Image (cartoon, rainbow, N blue to C red; front, side, top):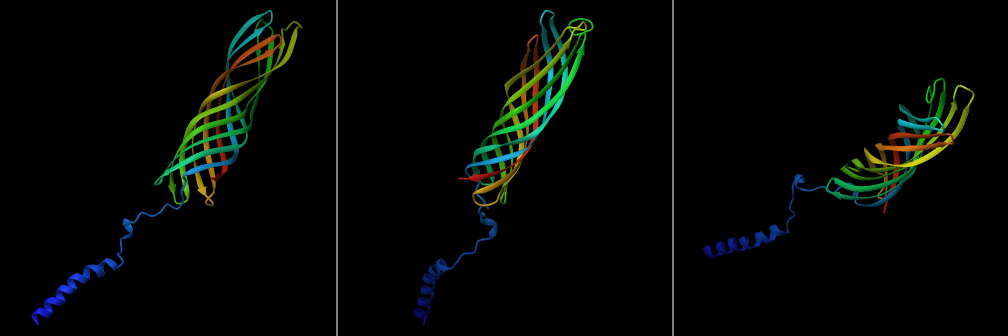
Length: 255
């Protein structure tokens, strides 16, 4: 009997580990890493459009009038330049857990313009007057920016910043009256490339595995340039600084 009992115990000791190995193991949910709801890694391209609120500030101005010499003045005028934007985007994202790193470039045509007028008296000689009207704007805007974001389910919330490049335009019309019957009228145009910076934030949502939609805000500072208006008898150099606040929406396709 003792030998029989010992044999049963020994058989059980050998069989139990094998049975335990075949049994399913339940692991607490807290120790299981949930798979991300959406993977943002990859190349994408899309379209975007929105509205911009810009500021065109005309600062120091130097004017030359034929036969009368030079006039320097600090205009210090600021005009609001509002208008639409529409363009395209291309970029790449790389996701690390919930963090997403990206690089994005975009190009937009814009209708942002401002109009203003001013006059000066006793400019080159007592009794004379210069009436000036000008229109400034941004004809196109491009940015190259880095993006840093974090995912929340199928949403990506991100900050963005980088380089901004734009083409600024200026149209100036001047009417001069010397107070003694001598007058001059002319129109001049000039354009310059502005280089500055862009900083903003946005949110992007995954609509399908390939399509995302975004809403974005950017502040763009384009620095200052000197515009030259050749008005025949009057030659004007004006220093102009441009900046803009932009809100736009876009749709991207992931490849």
